[in-house]
Image (cartoon, rainbow over all chains, first blue to last red; front, top):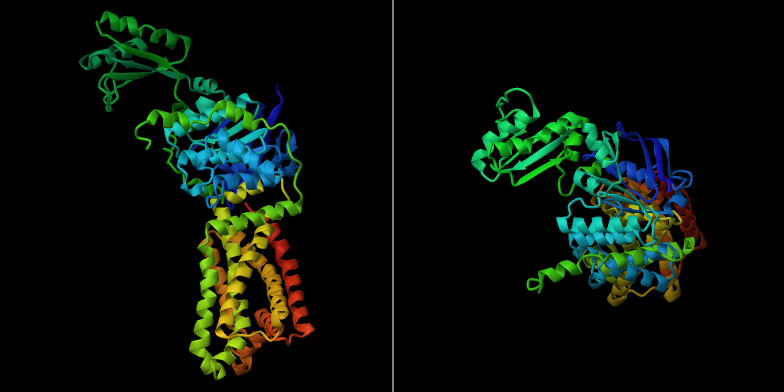
Length: 343
Length: 283
């Protein structure tokens, strides 16, 4: 299937004088996970709200499954599900009541709505908490009921706005598993995240957004290779040998005698706080890779034992740094800054 | 209880892929529900919220009790000569004031839903658009009825006897509900425009205080200075109280009642479309 589930052209949204979204183009193939990656305030939530018919674009067009989000908004609403900081469940009601209300609104009869609520609660392992008010739920349970609420009508396209922000690692893995199941089942998922790792884990393609614009688009590995370098990580058996090892690695990767810089790094080699570890940037050209492959024999010849060696692509953090020239803001657990973006 | 078997907990909390798959593969999609059914679902949701947060009824029930007791026994003798004469005058007005104050909650709850993100979920559904606003207004009617009943029961206990009888009293409360529904549209506008629920509450009270106190609820306008009386005479609350007092006292004129119905229709015709417009275009 090469059919596009979501296509947007030149989407623009202003809030006062701020251009929250400043001309975004997106093409999402059906049955894939598409990651929209960016720091707080980049315009991710605003973009999703436009695609989910909650905000009317100031300019540009967007289609979801071929339906225009402005002129055929109702048709789009019947096909999409939405979960995020903004499409929430009612904390005063119980889990069951929330799902029954939504099922009724989708047109299920009273008994069918109850059955639907029970099915979903069962699938999300919330049966025991079914009669509890949602405000008593833990963060992970809360996110599961949010997800369940967006799946009442088995949406063809699912928008997840920062689905794991503020979750502990286990709950985050649960959400990831759910997304994988949904996509395996044929759904298309567009998720926004400020966790680079998350986009890397889940998304078939990624759009990196900054200041309301798409600054890069592609698969995770395309984005990484576009940075033009990877990283080699080593771990030594003996911390005392690190200085010597660093010199050898630097020589292997670069011609000439390596010089220690102000930060204490030796040439291209950085020395982290862990005194057994060292890492270095590797040029991703064939020559650079060939040089990287000489590291292990050289260390072996010098009698340095290396229990761990990995040659990897750059992290998406490095990608973001390379694309924007500035590091990503460290994501706060609750991301309150985003509330200004959508109000 | 979970300390003994942490591993089991871990397994139990994980959604199972097969159950998930079964739950998301919906064999048949129901047809889109009617506008009426959707609206009633929202009304039902409003009632569920009253059930879970009964505290919100405290204001509704306690305020009229305090006001009735305070005005009757503190000021009643001074205003009307004796407390039972004053109670006859005051009680219909207190019922009106109570219900009008309760209408503020319409904007408050709407704004709470918006700030908590619940409203976006509703806006993302393929439903009759006005339902999320109109449904809760119907649910609020329950609140108004409870508030009226509490105040009336207290009045009866204190010796108030409506000359208009049960029929007149029911008609009065019915008319009051119509007016409250119309007035609610003002508060839905505030609920959509203001930033926080508390701001909605504050502004609404600022609007309601002069409207209820500068009216004929507590005293006969004939005793007021002419400038104030000019305001009281055009205050819609005054006309509403006149009609309610007339119905409960068995002296209502057709004109009094018609006036309230016309004003209610006009308010709904003006403020409901404004509400819906803001609702549709709000970002």
